[in-house]
Amino acid sequence: MGISWSMDILSYCFRNYPESDFIFLLTDFCNAIQGVLIFLLFVIQRKVLLLLKDKFRRKSITDEATMRYQSQASMTTNLW
Image (cartoon, rainbow, N blue to C red; front, side, top):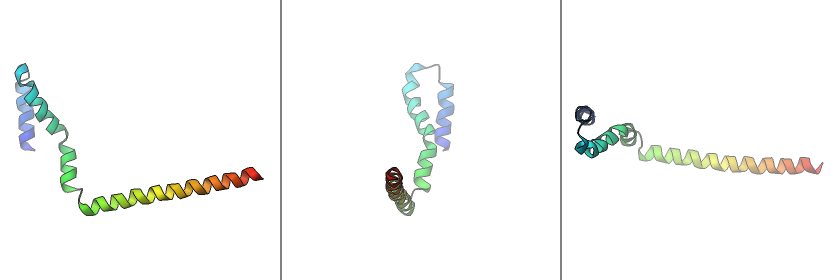
């Protein structure tokens, strides 16, 4: 983290030199996605991925069953 912050300070100091824009664009991008990288490195592990996968899979199955039930109930009420 210290390296990306130091590069951000350097990009501020060299902002008047257009030759260095491309290099500092890359370092600024790395600084911007730093939170995502930390999340991927420390939070996302195999166990967490499996739990998220199961949760979203169960939710889609539950939503599908609910939609089927609602469509059957509406067909029943339309018949009366």
